[in-house]
Image (cartoon, rainbow, N blue to C red; front, side, top):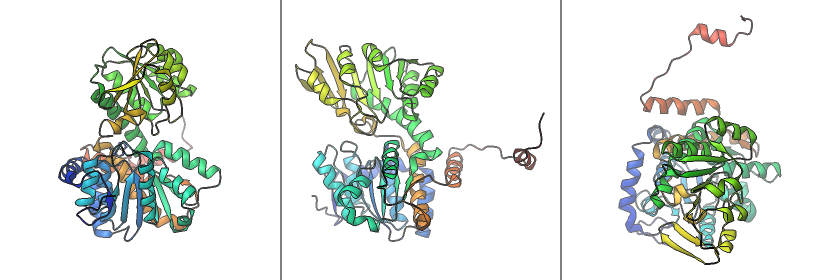
Length: 426
Ligand code: ADE
């Protein structure tokens, strides 16, 4: 464990990286005007005074701005990584050295270190958890139940985490109320769609430098993330195929102009496959075995189990080797080569820098205002999964719209009366 010269605890790769991290945190801040306004109010009002928060998030420039905002609001916070490959080491260093926020995160950490960092974040005895993918909350419930009585509430960032929380609730094991930030309109409609869309395509290009134009690119899953990836890839000229299990989403994909087919058929013609389903073994052994020579496969879902990597290793009887950063070449018995990006971990954060600050501005405005809301309301809440009140969601949208320089109309009194009346007809 690092003993930083700043005197603040933490475990980061190298504190000497802090100046670069600080400059990059400031760069992201420029594109986070909503979070900035919240931070300025938090500085004055200290709504989170003394609240112990343990946050398990991707340690990026945008997350740094959230952590700084929570600290400005008076929170006593620690941060650990929510994925072994998503940490930006310079940011982690700056959080410790420049902002006095204990941070436990090293890019490329092994699973043992990843869970040790989560355990250290829990040693903080959180009164509030802030999670992305639910690893902090599940570890707390499974391994540290003695800490549960301290916890007033939590927040959860992502689709996968919210699915796990709802399962905990249904199984009667969830012990405190959690806000599903992902359910806010100002989160999933923008972060999942435009954020995942752009950052995933950016990551595939950064890793491979392939020209997407004219290539067949398969997107597995047509939720908000899949919609974003498919539309951005189409914009770059890729010939996009969507695979789905949900008939309604499959129709949406068809009507958005994409071909839809089962994965086994798609795998046979794919140049690139990107999984964004949140489910396991979406690219399973039979699909992997059907891939063409030279196919590139990547995952942008939260966990690294969407591609069956043990099956890929078993198929690669001629071995595998790293051919460039984040690109692993697997050679099958018949000589075909398949390229796995970023060990099947979420490619947009492992290879690129995650979602741009402009969308994380709204996601993290939800986190900051959500923490304030949960603290105020927790006494009246059950151990369930909650959604942020619509007024907070709309207020974030209003602030973002204003920051984007756009104005909109308001209802006239006549229109308001019309909308609330039932009597009028043709
Ligand atoms: N999830 C996706 N992109 C992110 C980012 N830039 N920062 C934190 N979490 C993210």
